[in-house]
Amino acid sequence: MSAAEMAKKLTLLDAMHMLTKAWNCVTDVTIRNCFAKAGFTKGTAPEKQMETAPEKPMETAEPPESMNAISFAEYVQHDDDLECHGMPTDDDICSDMLREEEERRNHIEFNNDNEDAEEEDADTPIRLPVTASDARKALEEVRRFLEDTGCSDYKTFYDLEDLVEKVAEKSRRQTKITEFINWIP
Image (cartoon, rainbow, N blue to C red; front, side, top):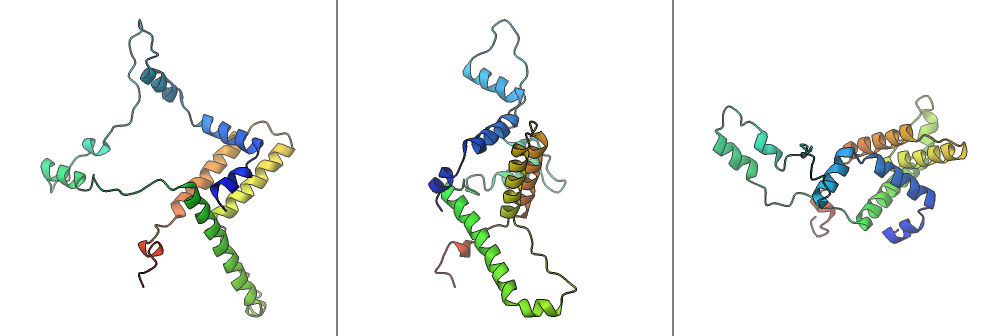
C-alpha cells in the first residue's frame, strides 16, 4: 500500500483529531519565537529571554577527568560530518507497517499449523505479543467509541496515544544493513 492509498483512507474526523493533537504540542514559547523570528515584536517592550535549545548540547558538557578539554572536543566532534540518520519517506513507513502486519500474520499461521501441539498443552495458553500496529488499531477503536458516545474531552486519549507511540519507539530495533543489501550472503 502506497502513501497515496493510505491518504485516501483518511477521513475528515481523523484529520481533525490529528490537527487537535498537533496544536496541543504547540506551546506559548513556540508561538512567541515564531513571531519574534518573523519580526513581529513590540518596539517599546524589552525583549524577553526566549527559551531555546542549545545549538550544540555537547558544548556545555564537562570532559571526563581522564581527558583534557581539547581531546574531549575532538572526541565529540569526530563524527559531526557523518550522516547518522535520515527521514523515512511515506513509502518507507507504509512498507514497515505492512511488514509488521505480515510478520504478525505469519506468526499466527505458524501457531495454527501447530494446533495439535497446543491441544496437548492446554494448561498453558500461548499469548501472542501485541505489536505497535495492533495497539494503534485498538486506539482507533477506542477513539470511535468516544466519538460515538459524545465525548468532548480527548486530552487523556491523546496522552494515551503519545504513551503508545513512545513505547513503540523504544521497542523498535535498528535495521541491519544486510536487510537493505540483497547480495550479502
